[in-house]
Length: 225
Image 1 (spheres, helix red, strand yellow):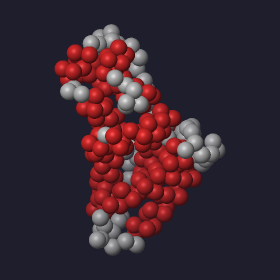
Image 2: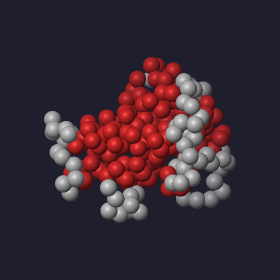
Image 3: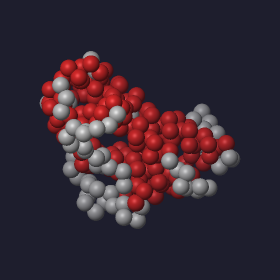
Image 4: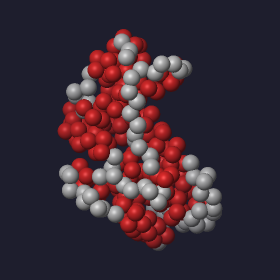
């Protein structure tokens, strides 16, 4: 399932796999390449089936080089996920091209970015693999939550506070509001995609518009608790 972004080119955020070893670049650039290559393998082959040796071979480095930076595979996975989330968060908060926009317009923009990532076929595959493996890696599950959803929730909560400070939203528990918004936006489409029952002609824009309207109308009538 791919969300059509033709009318909204700024929303086309996709994971881009890099192949081969960088010919040049700083140590930081090589480090980022390692994280992105490792994440690509984790997403396409699964955590259990992806070894440090496999990652090293894909990146053109030795296993020793990887172990000098990460003590084990789980630590590398967390670092790779954190890097991915940080890039996504940067895309979410870059709303300077939306000056003086309403909260509904900003939420619509951010929601396109989120859904493009969540419904990317490789991300769906990664979720599917993760569901089968997470019971064996409870520590990993907690860490993934802290670098993924919790970071996104905090960004949204900060945006809500900003609009509240301008008198456009009533006082509320904005972190809880952000968590609820993400559930409304993501849960249904993601679960259908995981089970392969998301219709090919599913209308992402209609879904986003409905969720934004439902959420904002509900939030306007909420009391701070």
